[in-house]
Each structure stands twice: as C-alpha cells, then as structure tokens.
Image (tube, rainbow, N blue to C red; front, side, top):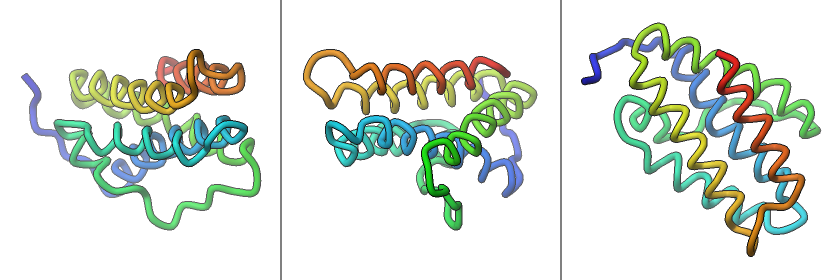
Length: 136
C-alpha cells in the first residue's frame, strides 16, 4: 500500500530529468537505427506509468539543457537517476520500485524498436541506466 508523499518541485524535476533523460540517452544510442522510434516507444512507456510516478512523469521537463553531446546528457541524467531512486526509497519504497520499473520498461521499449536484439550501443546504454538506478 502506497502512502501519500509530498514531492517538492525540485524533486519532481529530478524524477522528470532522470526518466525522460534516460529515454533521450537511449534515443541517442539508437541513432543508427531510428532515434525517433526509440524516443516514441520510450515516451509512451513513461506516460503510461501509474501511481505517483505516473502523475509526475506525465510531462517532460521544461527548460532542461541536454548539452551538445551524449556525454553531457549522461552527466546530467545518470546522477539524476540515482538521486531519484534515493529520494523515493527514503519516502516510499513502493514508488521507488515503480519508478525503477517504469524507467526499465521505457528503455526496454526503446531497445525493442530494432528487429531482434538491441544494438550493442543500445544494450550498453541500457546497462549504464540500470546501473545508475541501482546505485541508490
């Protein structure tokens, strides 16, 4: 049973940067195939989330600068994933699990847009995202 937790605007931004940023990282990693399909499938997964996480992730973060390179994006997103998990674990472990599974579904949905197995680039980006989630 999930209890009601109050997230500050900064907390919500952290969750949005983490989740939407993870989809952006997968999209960048999938550029050799179809970055647009990766982003679309990942976005659908995020906006299909339920619970508190679903309410927070209904909109992508505004005003976030994704930088000029994938490395700059990763420098923002990977720590945000860990911070989001830490924050949610402290306040509501069920919502932390919900956030983790939502992000995993989003990156898997993006990775599945290529026929067969994800490319090594997509698989490696998914591994980095999962490691950042699990670092909390």
